[in-house]
Length: 488
Image (cartoon, rainbow, N blue to C red; front, side, top):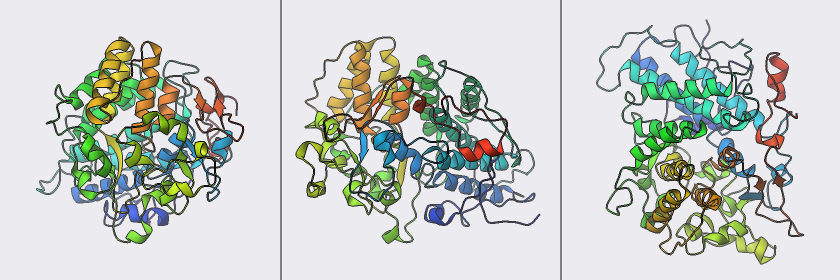
């Protein structure tokens, strides 16, 4: 078969990716930056290792975790908004028209994540077919294949959060298609939500003690702790709060609030965390997308994300000031967000001025996808379902120790969950969690940023069709077995 230097076609749709926009992300993951489609593509462990690097490059696609997935988690939620001074991208988010069948947010994300899954399935098709020759520079074969399984699981979890209903709610037949072998001609129906998440959990549980430390440099590939965080996420999604709490506690340890512990990001390190290379090796970081420095002048992640605010060429997506004002005195408020004050040049009235996002504006910074601090919020959310008082204590202790010593929230009852989500939203803004958090907890999406009349720019009530994204039109056309989301 003729070899090709293009990404593998999705197993669900005949969608071919041009790699030009992502080549800067691929250079450090693989010498070639692609996976070869060939019956003899993987002949030995060295070939397998190169293909695993290629798999990691698929995660870095700017239509996936290198950009759009993270972007739309904010823009389809409540904290972000699109400025009037922008490049024309994402303007539908202000009016709630951002999710459409024939374009919009879902198509590129769906295509990219399934393309990554197809690549993983292609690689996993070589299990049992090559010899595990000893090589001091490479992990064992089962470890290499474990990386492919985690990458596949990560994609499936992300697809579920966007394109399916919550676990145990609504029509549970509306999971996502679940191919586990590479077949570019497959036309699969949706699997049930429970089958997809149970299979994801099975894969992650099977490899968590196998995968060990990151083998592609510091935190640039999944390691055991990253897998544990994914398991905590998966069990939280499944509403198995006991197991989710177990894994979050394992990641934190009993002394995580101790200021001498090196696990969590400390208050004194917040200001430089997203701006210096040395922070990339922090124990706070569990997994990040490796960033090539071949051409720093064109490699500002903020420009690709469109979320760097005033600091980027796009100058468009910001945090709403009404939300930001809740965190006066917090170390994050004037480091990760308002920063230099460049947004003061905007003509809007003071209460409408956008808050600049200062994350990922350093052109040398890898993009963090998994941080240990997320375990604090998973722990608190799990505790909330059995004891809101315990959950509030967990949250209060962390905020006082690591972000704002004067924090004094006394929330009780259901208000505790709102406080957990607000703190998490501020901590992880533009890091790919907000929409999923609101959806999982059945919270409406009410934009903090008001219109000129002081009304929310967008209101999406609980149960609205937009909480389940539509299957892209291209997929529906090519796959007669796929079932469209309700209301589209």
